[in-house]
Image (cartoon, rainbow, N blue to C red; front, side, top):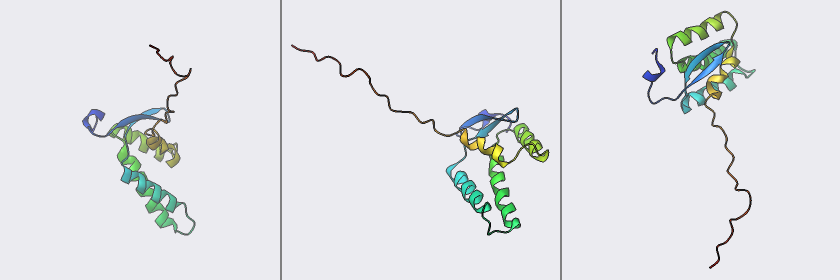
Length: 117
């Protein structure tokens, strides 16, 4: 899929990574849950290296699936292969979609004057 417009129904954002602008899709709730679970489990000391690699491989597969265009996917893979990118650099794929917290509007200056008849 070369054009983000070909992906209707999924919100996209542009995420800057090492000088490249990467177009990514909004992760689904299920993807977020799986990345969180596997990431936490992969950090534990009581699992062997083979299981750790499987868990982090799955997390990376999800990150890779969020990249919209093949050109962007290749840029990210090239950065990883060259050692210029690691998993923490990919967290922008998720944080780009965080809801901006808005404070409730507070009216200043008191009540408007009462109308008297």
